[in-house]
Each structure stands twice: as structure tokens, then as C-alpha cells.
Amino acid sequence: MNNEKYLNHYVETLTGTMTDAIIRNISLQANARVTEELIDEQAKRIEELSVMEANRNSETDSEVERLNLVIANLNNSIANLNNELSDLRNQKNDFDNVKHQVQHVDTFRNELLKERDLHQQTRVEYTDRIKELKEQIDYLQLTPAKRKKIDEAKTTKTVDVFSNEITDTIKDGGSF
Image (cartoon, rainbow, N blue to C red):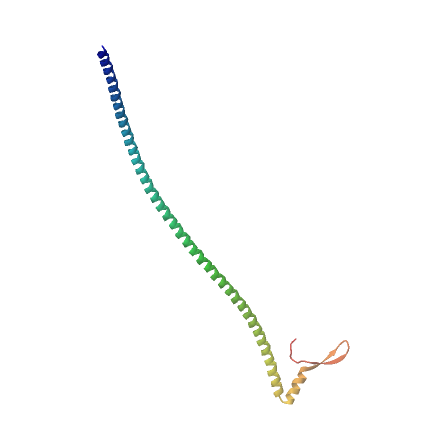
């Protein structure tokens, strides 16, 4: 019986060992399949995320390009506005210069008008003086007899009623 017991224990041990090995083998194969499926799922997820990242990078690049174009347009607008501002400042300076020149011309014109009036007054004075001198020349060119008649015509005697005095009034033809 010893042999039989041995054989029973042997078969039992062998069956237990085989069962353990088969279960372990099945468990390892199941773990391998689960791990492969997880790895495949993770690989797919990684690929999807890579595609999404590439799309986002391209979208970001296109957005960056668009923003760079907007910035370039705004810089051009700023440059144009700065040029326009510079032109307007130049025009303002030109306007101020012309304004000062106009003020100088107005001042000169006013001074010229004053001088013209003074010249006209001087001309009138000299014309009157020339007229007087011509009359004196004509008077001096007359004969003494004619001069005496003219002198007597200029001298008139007036009687002052209140004092009964006779005064000689000489008319010289001047104006006061």
C-alpha cells in the first residue's frame, strides 16, 4: 500500500502542479492579452492625441500668421498716421510762417498807407507853398504902379463904432 499511497500522492501532486501551471499559464496569457489590448488602446489614444496636437499646432501657426499680418497692418497704419501727422505738422509750420509773413505784409501795408497819407499832406503843403511863391513872383514881376494899386485894394480902413478909431486892415489873402 505504500505504493498505492505514493501513487495517489504523486497523482495528486502532479494534478495540483499541473493545475497550478495551467492556471498560471492561462492567467499569464489572459494578462498578456489584457496588457496588449491596453497597449493598443494607449497607442491609439497617443496617435489621436498626436493628430490633435498637430492640428492645434497648425491652427496655432495659422493663428500666429494671422496675428502677425494684423500686427503688420497695424504697424503700417501707425507708420501712415505718423507720416500724416508729420505732414500736418509741416503744414501747420508752413501756415504759421505764412501767417507771420501776412502779418508783416499787413504791417508794411499799414506803414505804407501812413507814409502815403503823409506824402499826400506834404504834397498839398508844397503845392500850396508853390502857389504862394508863384503869386509872390507874379506880384514882384508887376510894375511898381500896379503893385501900389493891389496894395491899396488889400488895405481897407474900418471904423470901430465903439471907440471911433480908424484902423487899417490889410488883406493878405492868407488863410487861418
